[in-house]
Length: 372
Ligand SMILES: NC(=O)c1ccc[n+]([C@@H]2O[C@H](COP(=O)([O-])OP(=O)(O)OC[C@H]3O[C@@H](n4cnc5c(N)ncnc54)[C@H](O)[C@@H]3O)[C@@H](O)[C@H]2O)c1
Image (cartoon, rainbow, N blue to C red):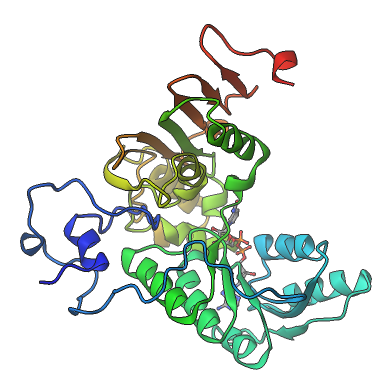
């Protein structure tokens, strides 16, 4: 079999891990030939998957006004409409959701601020968003729908001639990752995963200091997404969230931690993720919580025995240049939220959490006054 970039990853055994970062290029089953590993996700033809254009660093033609359409005006989508309304050079042209009241709320919000009313697309049908893509002249389509819908919506958006931006995670399987990469290369449209944690103040400060050599050579990053979501993930009005955890284990939401770590380590810009060992604890809370709720509310009966995600997942990743990442994921225990983010270099370290965030050049933390 000719090796292309798709089957190279598959042969290396990444399939089914739950980590979907585009930078992972091989994995731990060293000594195992591609033929010995049963294809798990997709069949690959000889020439499928070859790169047709390199989108890394590609600058699309400049636009004076960016015409934006939204798919999904729930919690995240509405907040994004409000943020986008603050930007100059942006016109919000169209909004789509299953529920007209959500579209109306966003239309009213914009109208009250003197902005033109965007066209609304909502009649309860699952596919109406395609009309938004087909009929409107849009430069960017922003997708804030449940996670399983992101890949097909991104692909359709790019094929309709717009750049795509999607809430995280952009995809849930390697096959979906490749669909996004290949469509982006084919259409020369950007497909941006909106990983907001990469742009936090501390993460950008430490990235800047790293690039200026303040910490010497970076050796290791500790990263995490730890957040008590016991209630959120069982909310009836967010049933799609509960369904995310049915028959899935591993780290299914890796990018809040992994994104900033990959920036620091120059992943896909001089280094790349090489292999990973990922281990989950059992679930000790969510299955029991579902059973408890089911005693008082029949709605939860459908999920009894279905929750598969272990409470605590720990993944150790090594890069080709010999650096390591410790990536933790825990959303099922009552602990304070943290993304940890410790950056360890040969000449110093930085830690984000627990707060206060600090740096050290050895021999204790630099105090707040010195930090300023
Ligand atoms: N980056 C972050 O920090 C962050 C935080 C929260 C959520 N998210 C992500 O944002 C996304 C949305 O989360 P949310 O909390 O806003 O969920 P939500 O349920 O509040 O919103 C989703 C919206 O999509 C709409 N929708 C569903 N199917 C649709 C379809 N076929 N066509 C059009 N609209 C459809 C729903 O009606 C709903 O209004 C998720 O992918 C989630 O992972 C990211």
